[in-house]
Length: 407
Image (cartoon, rainbow, N blue to C red; front, side, top):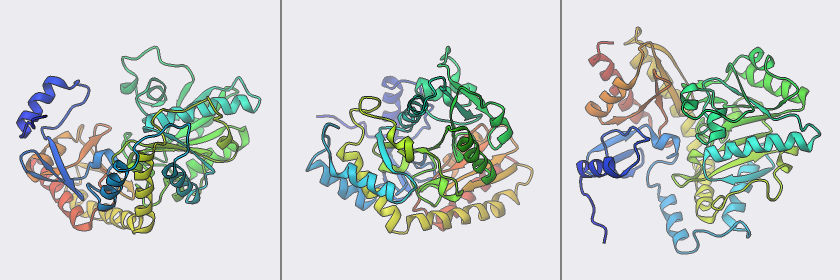
């Protein structure tokens, strides 16, 4: 029998002893959650605006997710991709019928899905008579994953460091700067990969004209336009896919994060000829598209699409940005550079070098969990079921922290 540690201190002590130190962890041992709230092993209650890094879209322990898990445990958790399973087909059907895409290819993580897009781009070029094309243009300050190829695709030196020599075939343009992309396109270019909203790069939405310009460029050159919606897809922006805000349809798109409500699942969604490219033997995964993860994705999508979650996301997201201007920016004008976001991915960019002091004070003094990205951007990625009252609690905590810091 496994004996529980029983307290934050014991879990943390043993975690530091046995876990690899590749993550910087806050001094809290999560025990359980409900909605937008979580509890540690000592019974302390916190408002969770990290949301599993945008994974817990329906919050913690949603009743339909709990029921789905029970049903799956009593029927089948896994079967090989040598066979069909209904949850995988139903989930793909829902994604296709609510988007511009024709086909769905499953993966286990956002990085794996982006690996799939990169492979798709190279094979697409060869299939269409351009074996010389292998380069994917991505954006500076992007984030696409931590496999060797996707960390190279990521336009941040901090992600590249220590892993040279990096794979060849990636170039980095300025986000929201179409001319910067045009300057990099040549006879070797196979695709352009961008996030519609940069998440790890500081919560930076794309300009509509930038994405429209990329679409026109790709059409003219016969290359693929690929979106990374790992963080901002699956309802995060108030629409199922972020591209739906822009009137620009990519050839393929990666999603993950909130799709499985906490169980790993990702997908590459593709249309047109891009949906015909990855033929048998060219890409796949043992666990991808299994009945457990897909049943949870199917349930998640049903709740998002049919129970008002997307409308709530859009409405509460607008409220967050309006209140952030009133509660934070107006009271601390010298500390706030910009407030930006879409739906329920929002950022407060600070004029200070780091936002970690605010994160730490919100945790310690108010029991509010937020995080800091890109050095000086406070990021808020809560469950999509959060309320305006919870927004007020979070922003009051940020205000209190900034006041305490003398900002």
